[in-house]
Image 1 (cartoon, rainbow, N blue to C red):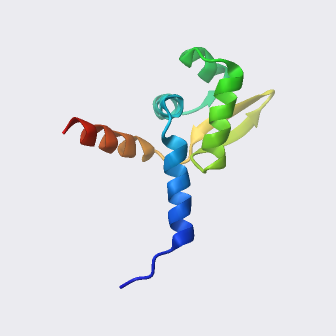
Image 2: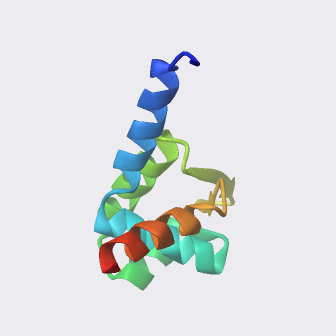
Length: 97
């Protein structure tokens, strides 16, 4: 029997917790669709405050879900993995079965 890596499990749990919020799921879906967006783009599309968008983006970035890159005066965000959509689809499918 293989040994359980508790540290790795905690990292995975933190990432799942960071995804588990309606606004963050919406941000992930937007980035999946658009590829790269600025904070301004995200807050305009989702019709949320810029501070709210920044807060949720920071949580996703801190937990390794997003990458960000400064371009001029704006930060642009992208998904680190395109497989997140598969996780969301799986969860959604389980809830409809």
